[in-house]
Image (cartoon, rainbow, N blue to C red; front, side, top):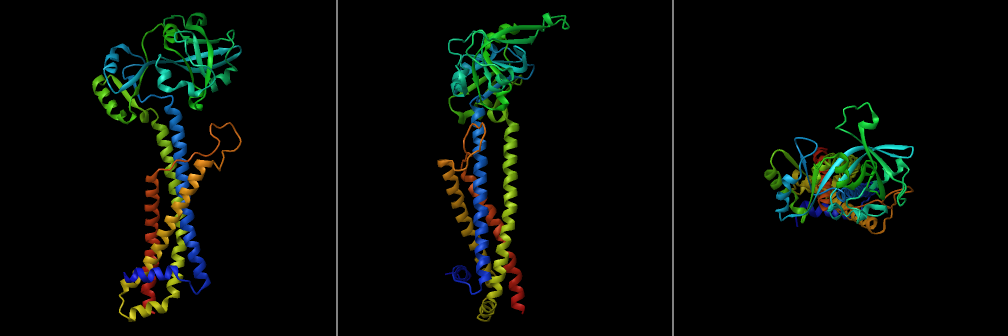
Length: 403
């Protein structure tokens, strides 16, 4: 057996004669365990929130979105053949968006109409986000709307009353007398048949209607985007690259990550910030290793001189205490990862820690374990432990051998 490892193992697992050394060694081990477990648990919670948010948005957003680089709207029929002939595409639908003023009695609110084609419900599983009322069903070309929960709140509007129609006003671009309200706006009304809830970003912004309704109101057959659902999400980047090269520079093909680039940056920045803060706390906790290792070396001063007199080199003596410190870090990080995984698993299965009182879409903190995070946590703890073990082993060995 390797001499430094054998002695380091004996020092680690044998009882210490001094109470202070024993307590500090235990505290240093617990510091590594708790710090590692905290890193694993909090990163898993951030993963849970990230997956929750993205799953919510992905239920509404397509795999790919085609827009025009030359204007707000374009003729969708010009590229339909390219989409129909692509075997990787499952569904695609025309989308037309427009800012509108909505009025219900004395209540007014500005929002966006997202007018969609027939396949939109299949692409987004619209039924899963409707909290009241119904889907379009047989209303495909009718003057009906599914309203965001936030929009419905601002307008004090419910569903199911055929006499309670929502008035919609859009700018009349053909009008030459913009100062005359009667001709400056085109107006119509829709019947709210459902209310959806997806998240504040969507609930406070959108109402959804059949595309034929908005095209008739705007008197245009163009679309603002074509949304594409793929048969296999894993081919998203490949199909995006193909469509972009096929359609040319006049169009922009965006994947899901690009449609929410800001959200991804925010989530990654917050996760990195928490990781760095906890790493700093772990660095502070590892100062206990420096203290316990220093006290152990002082306690074993006579052993160090005995090893020296028996022919052990200074480097070998340094390796003994460096190895002892690294064993503390490795065992502590291993137990910490196990503890973090145990707590994360219990939270996933039983939802022990709840979100508290309030109108939350989930009842407990979401947790998702990414095993790459475990690797980064282990590497981080080992790097910190390398310095915490090397410094006292290097400095104190030199001093104790000179005295």
